[in-house]
Length: 280
Image 1 (cartoon, rainbow, N blue to C red):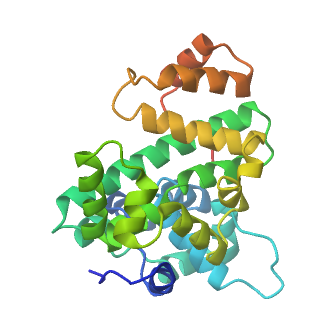
Image 2 (cartoon, one colour):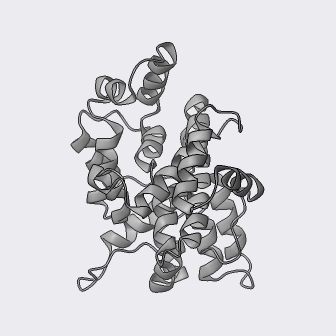
């Protein structure tokens, strides 16, 4: 397990050199595909990769650090990325190890929190992708990946710095009035938003992730889509009776030009755990 770094810069250096873990389910599914050439193609591998925010960022980070000199555009479409690098190279250079579950075997509370964060990210990504298609967004895959990676710095900290993350959680549980950013600053020396911004810049993650942190972009359609999807995933994580959900339905309705009742029907009858056949 990594020793806590003294600064944000120290963590960025550490994470840039670390082997990013993936979920056990991801490793299992990739092994299954690799063992059956009838199942193995870029589309099926991309589907597994983009169900795991940790594996997604692992792949994108690898490609950005190994891209050709004349490549100026950012890589966001995972299937296109896999076709570009080849599946043999993917399995060799982006291994599905270590496993997050094994890294955190001595910190089960941290593992539970990591998996909850991953689950929220998956739900947010499914919602955002569905809404992007409804809004005729030509870059729906970027919307999906951006929603999936909205809290990726938090996930990495759960994996590599569980004790301090649990301390933050304990303090907030004990005092509900504490602001997340204030507690993070006290315990870590920096905020989660600061880390997410710097990680996005240094790892050349989708530009939409930076737009999410820019107040000037707050009212653009794509930022609204991802933010509202993340809010809905968070507020509905423990059921459909959260007090914040009616406001979510109203704001989503404004985005999609639907009534709040239509939004309720949409998000509850189209479970976020099932991607459409056209996705990815």
